[in-house]
Structure formats: C-alpha cells, structure tokens
Length: 528
Image (cartoon, rainbow, N blue to C red; front, side, top):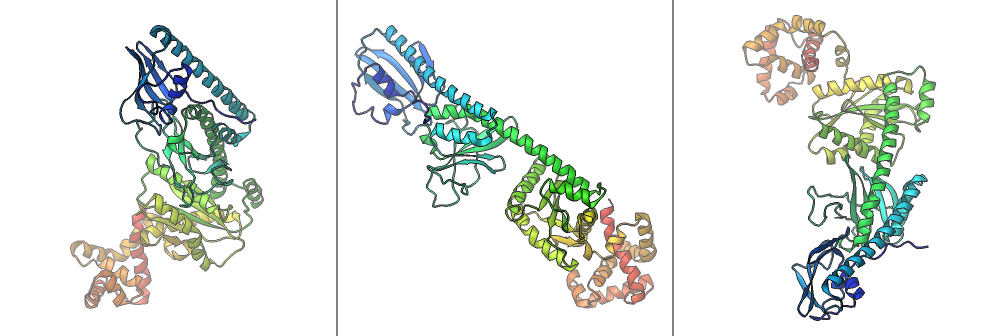
C-alpha cells in the first residue's frame, strides 16, 4: 500500500472550508496564492500557531465582510515581497462564532497531520528497532515521495534509495557547503535546507542537502532529489522529526566504527612494537581484519610540515587519513594507514619480495594518491616520509617501522627538499644516530676544534664550506655553485681549512674522520 503524508493546511483549504468568496479579484487567489501553506493565523485577539512552515496570515472583520492579509511566506515559491490583502465575503456567523469555528477547524486539521506523522514515525522507529539498519532510508523515500540517500560526516554513502529522479546506484556529487550562519529562511526548530550540485554537469536531477546534527556537530547528511523551494511544509516537518532517528543511527554507527578502529589500532600498535610471540599469531590475527601478513610489507612513516598538535590540526589530519584510506582502498583494500603521535604510518603489502633498490620507487608510486589528497587539505605544506627496509615477513615489520622513523627524522634534516628518504640511503648517518651523544660530541671537538674556534672569530664559514665540498665528492665547481662562491674563493677556503686543522683535507686518510665529525654537527639538530 502506498504511503503518503497528508496535505498541508493552505489558504485555499481555509477559504473553501468556510464557503467564502473573493470580492476583490477572483483570479487573484488561484493557483499560487491558494497553495500557500499557513504557519500562523491571527484572528483579532486569538493567535493560532501551527508547527509547519508557511505564511503569516491576519484575518479580521470589516464593514463589508472580511480582509485576509498575508504578511510573509517562508520557504515557499509563491512568497510575496510585501503584504497582500484579499477581500472576502461576510460569513453567516457572527465574528466571535466564526473565529471559534476557524480555531476548531485548524486544531482538527493540525491533529490529522500530526497523527499521520506520528504513525509514520512509529513505523520508522520499529524498522530501526528490528535492526533493519539503513533500510529506513527506503521507507523515508516512500513517505516523502523523493529519492533520498544518506551520508556519514566523511561523505561516505551509507544508503542510497534511487529509482525515480536518481539512478539506482550512487553517482558523484560535490561535498555539501553548509552556511556558517543560520538563514532567516529556517525558523527556530527547523534545519536549513541547502542546495546541492552533482559532479556530472549532465545530471539534471535536483539535489538538496539536509544536515544531520547533534551536540557533537555534523553527523552526516541526507541528500534529497527535490528543489529546496519545492519541499512541502508537512514533509519538512516530518523530516525534522525523522532526522532524530537517523542521527541516532549515525551516532550508533559512529560508535561501532570507533570501537572497531580502536581494535585495529591496538593490533597494529602491537605489530609495530613487536608485542607478538610468533609470525603465526600475527598472520592469524591479521586475517580477522582481512590482512595477509605472510607477504612482505613496505613500511613508510610520514609527517606534515609545520604541523601543530592543536585540535583543529589533528582533526584535519584525521580527515586526511580517513579520506586517503577510502581512496586507496578503491584499488587495494589491504593497504593499512593509521595515525601515531601526529604521524602517518603506511603498510603497503607486496605480492613478493623486490630488490631493496626498487623499494623507494615503488613506495613513491604507492604514496602518490595520498600526496594528491593531502594537497587539498594541507595546501602549500609538504608531507615528508621515511622508508624502512623491506623484509620478507611481518615478523620484521617492527624493525622496518623504526628504520622508517629514523629515515624520516634524518631525511628532514639532511634533505629538506626530499619528500621520501629511504633508510638504506642514509649510510653512516644511521649508525651515528644510535651512538651516545656525548661520545659523538667529544669526537667532533677532537677532530674539528681548531676549525670551529676559527669560525667563531672569523666569517669564512669553513665548517660549512668543507662539508659541502665533501658532499659534492670533491667537485670544486659543484660545491662553489651550491655555496654561491667563485671557484677560486672556494680553493682559498679549503686551503685555509687545511692550515687551520694542520692536515691535508683532500687526503683520503683525513677525509673519513673529518666527514664523520662534520656530519655529527648536522645530527646535533636532532638531539634537542
């Protein structure tokens, strides 16, 4: 049996119910004016307020009959820019009797509508209590008469009820743009409807967004295939009531997902910190979530440039991870992405082992979709990644994770323009980072003290000059270009460094100790 909400209370219903006639302009009332819904009706000393959107109407007696004055109309395509006055014939009853009759009539009409809405709400509530999940959206579509779909606050389609104005399956749409300030078109107790747009310009179906909110903020959205100004006042009233049920369902869904995510995180943190006794335990636990840890995994750890651990920044990071995970899962559901201490951790499964020299290029390809998404949420800010070594099974994922963290930390210091630094390319720096800081500083001073003292008193910057010379493999022209010096000036500085240190800085026997000591100076940037 088809479900249909009752009709709203309009000016046309009022005039016909009491056999009134228009005496000013018979053509004035129809069809637009007669279809205006009534929100409030003022009868001299009596005010009848209905819980529906519509116009404010004043009805009062005059010598020759009645005057009907429409002062405003909200959310209605027939809204008037100014007050509209309509002359009506005089009723047979006295004005007090007529006022009382109208008041009773309005109460009956309102009761009819509210009873029907309450019955449909009970049906929706029963549907939810029977754990039919988002089949409520199908029922709501039948009641409202429009195609409808439900999103969570991450814009994931949870339910899609198309078939009339919309296709049977979901189609791309632009994210809802909800106004920051409430509009006067949405009175107290009503959520403002917002116009939506499809990504496909060929789609001519209308789209209206209805935000689902709670004290926690936006929980999700209802998409309605109707124009905002075509949405009836009774449908609007009913949707405001039914939205509470959907918001509750979204809260429940949010709680389930949060609980599931916490179990994911607990397992993955145990994996990253080597809290499992064997590979068998890791593989069996991973299968519960659909992950195959018998395969090799590339581990990458990322960090956002100039990230501040404030609630707004962390929320953007959470949104980035959610959006990136959903996008990446479109082509590989086994990819794992999570947040740890404001860093991004990726685990990319491979079908088989590849050469260590190929892991950096492979990781760059796998991370590219993430970087593309990050550009929209963190524009003009880089996201750096460190890459651990590749191992044959998940038993060594914890080791690769620590390597990726080291590569990220050292890479940001040594290669500030590189988005991805592999642990394998750090060379001796990865060994130096693990040694005692005081021992490293003692070695640095023993090797470079005369040079450091000279730099404090002069302006030749011999420490930086010598380091750049070594990093350029002794290429004078390349080093001079990086230091913005003339090659002859660079030769003079290198000669001066040899004199200050009392050793030949280009001699292989001295280069190793000098280079290590200079690199320790760079590592000191991480010690704080």
